Amino acid sequence: MSQDQERSRFQSWRWWQRLGVGCGLWLLVASLTACQSPMSAQGTLVKVEQIANGQAIEISPANNSPGTPERVRLIGIDAPDLAQQPWGPAAKQQLERLIGSKPVLLEPGLESRDRYERTLAYVWLDGKLLNEKLVEAGYALAVPRSPNTKYDQRLKRAQEKARLMGVGIWNPNEPMRLTPAEFRAQNR
Image (cartoon, rainbow, N blue to C red):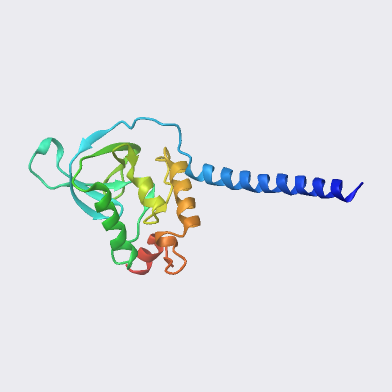
């Protein structure tokens, strides 16, 4: 085999190798950013009275009747406690920015209340799952809790993307050292 043939064969092999690496990277990014098949959320449109923290909102009582606002806990996420500086206040501020003064759609889970009697729901705004947006921006952890597992894969992909991008609680220069659950357990 001549040197020209050998060089051509080597260059061809290098081209295929680069193509394989490029395709592998593309597949990784595509799998992390892919969404589940589009579906329209079913639920109730509500007015948000207040953002309690990075994982809970308070909504107007049903039928605008007088009374105390109802607390709603976002399903599938665990945001840092407000005392967990600087991540807790940042998560609350992010949820405030995402919602603003707009009404949100609450999609109930299979289990509708937690042990604190908060309503459990997936929260949607303008077709976007806010539970997922908080995780994707690095303001909360994806925490699956059976039987409410409908969007677990979306939340898991969002967390992996945030971790790889090093955003929010995943920032390598200022990482969150304790999970919210660990922080709460240490500070009871």
